[in-house]
Amino acid sequence: MKAFWIEGTGKPTGRPIVMGTRGVISAGHPLAAQAGLRVLMDGGNVVDAAIATSAVLAVIRPHMTGLGGDLFCLIYLAKEGRVVAINASGPAPQAATIDFFRQRGMPYVPTDGPLAVETPGCVAGWELALERFGTMPLARVLDQAIEFAEKGAPVSKYLAKGMSDSLQRLSQFPNWLATFTSEGRPYRQGEILKQPKLARTLRTLQEGGADAFYRGPIADAIATAMEQEGGLLTREDLASCRAELLEPIKVDYRGYTVYEQPPVSQGHILLQQLALAEGFDLASMGPQSAEAVHLMAECKKLAFADRLRYLGDPARVKLPMDQLLSKEYAAARRSSIDPDHAILAAAPGVLASQGTDTTHHCIIDAEGNTVSMIQSIYHVFGSGFVAGDTGMVFNNRMSAFFLDPNHPNALAPGKRTAHTLNTYMVFKDGKPFLVGGTPGADDQVQVNFQVISNMIDHGMNLQEAIEAPRWSSTPGSLPSEITHSYELKLEKGFSDEAMEGLRRKGHVVKMDPAVTFSSEKVVLLDPETGVLCGGSDPRRDAYTVAW
View 1 (spheres, one colour):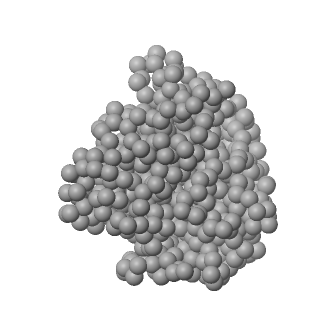
View 2 (cartoon, rainbow, N blue to C red):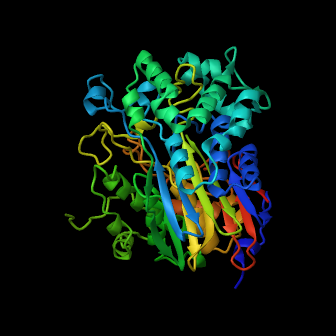
View 3 (tube, rainbow, N blue to C red):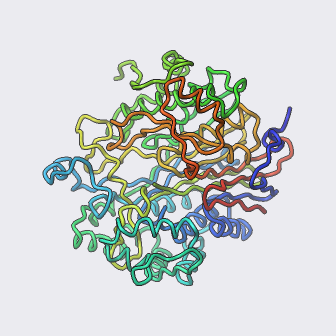
């Protein structure tokens, strides 16, 4: 058997595969990956390392993530022999109702300011993961994050761009300006960003644990700032926030088992895409051919149509996940795909009746213990709202709700919105093989789909699969986008022949050489040698380190 995960097709890549024997971490910033690796080397396990990495990302990538956001992860511990999922997305505040926004003439929940903020679940996720599966206390794994907040860290190219691009939009928020500009000027790449207020918040969290965040002094500071600025989030909302431990969802794809996040995550979209694609001989087509891209884009359209029709908070909406992921349903849906013509308006499937932005990291060790974790404040710098003196940027995840009471993702008090955040694990013969994920809102499930197919269908190694040119089909799942017509956006690297072939099939093809989609991170356990491998995306600040 050819070890395609190492050998690949022989095409040169911009980065090498990173290999080790004790641990591999791929993360959205080199300093974050090193923080996790240090915890592993100090005797921590993959969960301890994942939280340390997550905390550093919350400091040095504040435009993408933070304590004011949400978190999802998949965890596999070899001794337990099962994959578990953590959903650490917070619910809407109790005061958040459809009537509240409609009475103020708002067709959608706003994307900026305190009205866009849901209860942040990230810290609750850290607490649950460490209590159930970690070996170190929260206080220990926060050390490096606090150091970067107090002493500062160099501003990366993408953080500098996020600050510059957000200046006009977020200049209405004085606390954001005070935190992320120097006398009104966005920080430049290579300058040192210190966040002393965030450091104090992290120290309070270090001393008092998650209880300090949700029911103690940090909660008091958040609730006071929200009340002063007209937000809906209260101390009671914070006190009731809990992360959930759930069973993941899965499908088989060409002899591999792929695990994903269960609802409210839209991880089922990746699984539905794979289930649909399994009926096509993608291996006989070139990975960037018009034929392969067309079929995969059509799979995407059908899966997203089901997401918009059915996905909501499973505590409020009955979700037919067993049907959506069945082979029978995939076969029925697949029959609507025409190999020669693009779908112009994808409809959801009929089921039997029943009773911007993010950051991701993944870790694997020599025993096959793995974590795939993703966290976000949604848009770049989230809502732009920094609560008082906490130094925390808050999410704008409430803007993902619909204000249509008949929609499964309709806004309601205490309800969790359907989430773009998802992570995956691929098993072979009952053992972990490939673990990965990416930021990128609705591009996440599309890019993960392409990376998995690049490896399994086209024999690429993990770095080739990451660096291969990508496509993105829009619209996605946002309330403000669903009336848009389909476009197929391509990165540079697709041939003129492929683009023309896609146009002949009816796709509206757009190519912008400056556009890239997402930032995949992958770790892998070589089933033949036991060597640990990792790959990272050169499209953004993603790096892999090994031990």
